[in-house]
Image 1 (tube, rainbow, N blue to C red):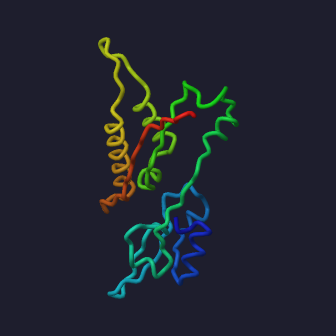
Image 2: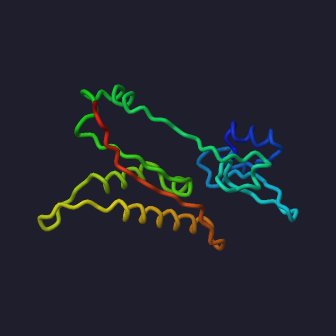
Amino acid sequence: KPHLDDERQRIEKAGGQVYIPTSLLISDESKETSRVYIPSANGMQLALAMSRSIGDFDGKVVGLISEPIVSIWDVQQYQREHQFSQGLSQDSEWFVVIASDGIYDVIPEEEVVDRLGKSLYHFTMEGGVTKTTNPLVTCEQLIRKASRAWLKQTPGMKYRDDITLGVSKLNFVTR
């Protein structure tokens, strides 16, 4: 997000401008987004609601970069902090979710993780048959929910942010 200190500083150092709505200065819960102003060849200014992007070449001149922010989560540290008995507990269910702000700006992370986790691991009995909810169906439902939320937030504009969502089980190999 362009309003984050490190992002804003990089953009401004490159000569770019960051617009930060007053509501965002007051609360991180604001529905408004900060934007980077990008001059275009025809003299107009574009406003992009991100500070990192693949393919927005015009934004490079004002400090946009394509390198992602990567968070590394230490599974062994998590186990120690949550007092797992030994190694990767057999009753633990591990998975990874990759999603864009088009999802997380309108659906709480907890809901995304809960629904996807249940679609991967929780079984139900129907007529004596054990089944899971298909993770692809759950992804599609979440994408549709996010799309509807974007349309509701921007009445008359028919705008929706880019929406990306993926999930995969993690299976650890013990040595």
